[in-house]
Length: 113
Length: 116
Image 1 (cartoon, each protein chain N blue to C red):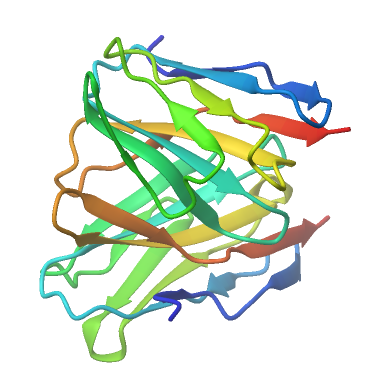
Image 2: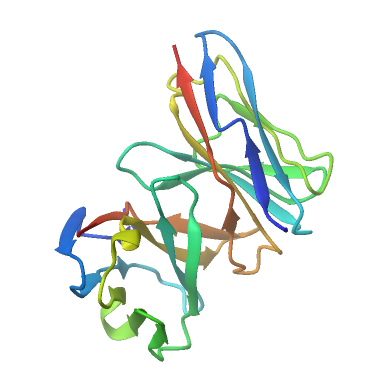
């Protein structure tokens, strides 16, 4: 089945540690995105990538980093510089960025202890 | 300034009642797209509908229907004969063309509880 997978579903991290969230898609989509969702709020864009080896900062990129070495993979690293990393992280992909529909993965819930 | 407003934070209805979720958006663009997504308790956002700014025809899909009115900048979503499985957070979203990509702006969401 085609879709987007994110792992792990739940992640616990100690303060001061970097952690990487995985996002893989087999939809052959060019564009991929990372969003952050806090309780009772909408989604905020962290990073997006329109093609392999290219990515751009979204609205809240500070304290995060990404890579796009393969079309199907777009991992997100939450660094120790992110002041408040506890949140629900959603990865999405779309065929392109011409008003295309974004399809979402199941999400990763990150908790900093 | 918030560009997508969902004024209803939480709604509770009894099963089989109809319910309308409101969405008001703001844009200066003439070409834009509107979306609705459903987020069940599992967390994954499920795509429901995509509508472009030039198509004001209402749409019906089973128990779901959407009313798009450019004159009032609204894109409301109605669930007919609600069911417990409709309990979720529903997000309205607006896609505008920016310099390098088409940014999607999500509203804050409306939490719907359908009580059996």
